[in-house]
Image (cartoon, rainbow, N blue to C red; front, top):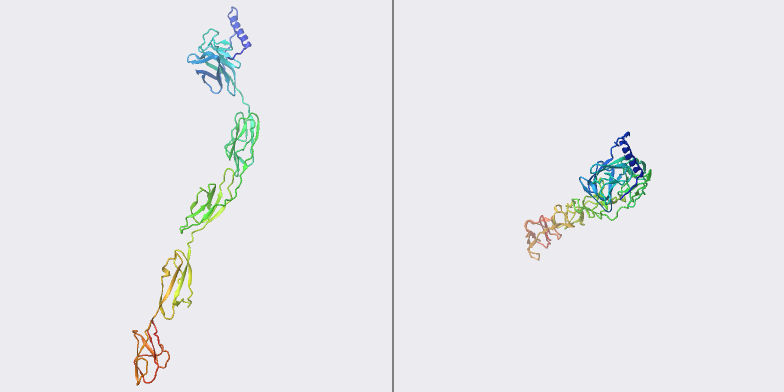
Length: 470
């Protein structure tokens, strides 16, 4: 139990009693004074055991304590009651209490004008007492405390200046508090962000000064906050500069493999990287898998910016467009010559899927040959591999060798020699002087009369055929 002794108050009580007594005596006068009319800061009304309703919140609080055998309870008609309990009224921060007026269940009052402001009961008597005096004057009529009027005033708060000095390479956000503030309560938070290329490391720390501290929110932001207890100057430590890694070296390009030119690849692009086609506005994050479906062109791969590093330099890669394979096409001539009278094989290089563009023409047949042709027509052939085309002339048919009747021999008397050829349409030419005949020799038309030793040679000729043997 809280006990306090106020001798001055007891003396005042005695004097007032005496004044009242004297005022009632014949011939005596009594001067009456008006009650204090100032409004209370708040009225505390009992609503349950150790619970209260405050007409104005956050001005004062009431707390309970007990003797070893004490306890309290609540009744709607009595308020707080019981034995061996005490209730202390305390001012909230920013307020000063000058007096408390305690009301019992019958609205009898007792005023306490000095701290601590306490109403209490004993283990033997539930009558509420203030400074050891029962509210009901000792008549054993009070049952409990129903409300408490609290008087006083708001305490002027001290004001302090706070000046924040930013470190290099950081910028205050426009919507946060000013760097210089004069306050009696908590400052408006001052927020800074790291400039591009800088960061606040995980161990970033600035010592608190007079209740003003610095909180690292992330790699990019810190906050200055708190309630000052004195004029304060606080200087922030500059953020750390990011490092710049070297360009990657393990990414690779895979060229397009079809005429559609849309199946190029980038390999080795990790999730820590990003890539961009030359001329594109944006970078695309790597997925850790091959980047597929790419068209021909120049591509750049780099390490992405992180909380502590800048983007790296670029690795430049080139995806080439599809180039169809080429094959050698060979041309041969058999039993003849090319138009330039040569016989050496001719060649050209032809892209796969295309047809030859330089097919030879004007071939010439060799003697005894005619009617040349290709084994397959080069102009109609689509090349998909190394290919040889052969132009062959066919051998002409030979005219049958002329025969003589009578055959060569020795005869008596003049002979009539008949020359014939089994080849239809053949013409026969002959000589009688032993020289080899040709188509310029005498043309045979009828039997030859021979009256002396004579050597006759003949040849048969027909257009489109080889001349006969002699």
